Figure 1: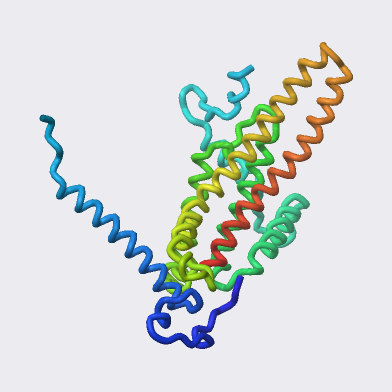
Figure 2: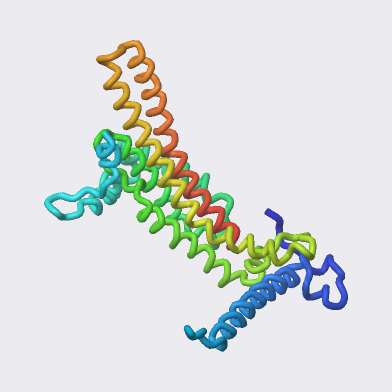
Length: 58
Length: 226
């Protein structure tokens, strides 16, 4: 198991500073954004199924 | 034969009342406590075993993890003694019941996870993404790591249940085969009996090893989260 990771040893700029797979902060943000994305997808499909009216038999 | 095979895994009742609670409490009744500094041989041996287990299991932990010492040492002694008592003929082994093993695994695993989220939120969340993962693989790997986290308590419980149940079933089958072969072909029965003896020795080892593995894995989950 790796010891305490030092975020200071990696110098990222731009969006990579917050979303990367090397620093603790970057990894945490990637995880949270993945979970957020999944939650949004689920919400989208749930709302879409509620809006679509039920097909009536002819 | 088929009905008898699984009869030993049915939760025992006496006149309609479940006696499984007494069976689960039995190992603790057999372990002594003493208020003397130097006690008898049995109690001294018991203390030596507990000390050895404590040193072995708790040396890797931080002070925060070592607060779980009583829980982990009790766990390994309980599972080990229950498994060993279950090797006696015609006894019921509580650790063959998935319900009981899930009841041990899920709260312990959940406790370690909640501890991790409470005290090291950033580090615990970052654990879901291994360091150095290529960018295209990030979402998939996070999902895989999440699934593997939730599988941990299931694996803990099913591993213990399956190992103990399978061992008992094998002993039952080979013992039955030995008995039947005694009248048909004594030399073959002798070979089967030797296999049964070797299997029994293996089951003694498995009983202790499974207790150690269960507790070690809980200890590792705790170490990851403290």
